[in-house]
Image 1 (spheres, one colour):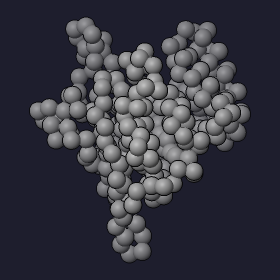
Image 2 (cartoon, rainbow, N blue to C red; image 1 turned 90 degrees about the vertical axis):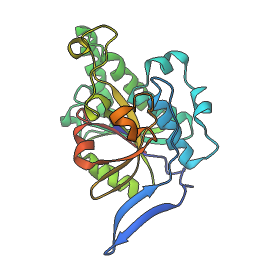
Image 3 (cartoon, rainbow, N blue to C red; image 1 turned 45 degrees about the vertical axis):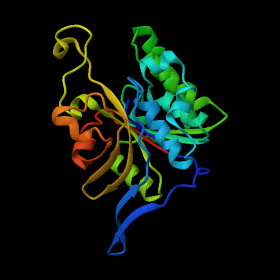
Image 4 (tube, rainbow, N blue to C red; image 1 turned 30 degrees about the horizontal axis):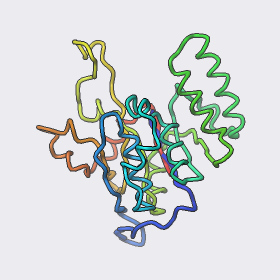
Length: 257
């Protein structure tokens, strides 16, 4: 799932913002976001840790891991699970921006949250009838949206660049998920032979700490597979051109805080 998280208004004690101003407008934003090296399948957990640490430097990846069950850590977290973890870490307002057509329909874009939830429940019932595995993801998103302890929201939109730039201009990093397989032109993953035939592409949660007119600055917790030609990404900080980043979020989930 691809998503952006929008951080709570009551978490604004952020580090200094590195900006370059030219001609009266902001040309570049670069935030001081800490990078954590992840354990296998824990990219979303590490990304949430980086986001939370940006606002509270006492929050560490190791502490955040204790909030998540071993089962979920082993399987990896979906978008709604990462958003829920951010709620647990103190963010009372989290917004998911999505264009994932397995989850939403663009005809819902102007609906109220209540109406979107109602349509999602109908979609969940449909998935149950046809035994679509996406039923669990839809159900988890419904539960997250209905949690009345928080002001959680969903925006149905594909103008990701607009949301990223607006969020970063406010001095807030952005959580995101990319298709790691396509981004790095890697082979699909399978436990059996012939992964190119029966394998699956891998989603990967990252944090966007800045942008300029040419691209986005990434904080990446991955490290195990960054060898050989990919060794330059091993440090966890790099830049992606806008077109490369955007084409590798094909299902359209971004997490904005």
